[in-house]
Length: 110
Image 1 (tube, rainbow, N blue to C red):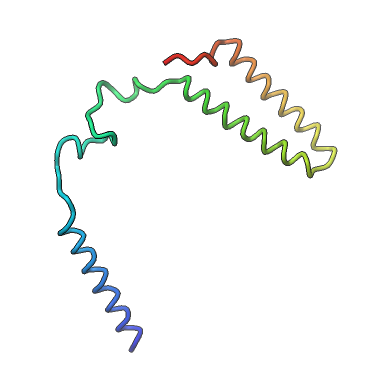
Image 2 (cartoon, helix red, strand yellow; image 1 turned 135 degrees about the vertical axis):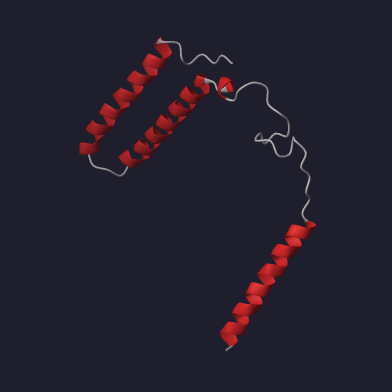
């Protein structure tokens, strides 16, 4: 019996809070408020044109080197056999870094 009273009280309280939130909420349907941009003003042009591929490449390099740091920490507690696999991974990462430097992808141009 007490369980059903508690359940009923909880449902009534949820309904009251929901109704109060709906009544007290600010309803401003200005074009800037309901637009898809979160900054509060309308964007100029297409969203796809403002994305820089250089930002994406720098982000990928950060993720790769962050994973490499995790590999360094794992090397402290692992056996000697994992050193070889770590060195192979390190050579691949340095090779990718060298290719990005060679093709000029590390130069930040906005």
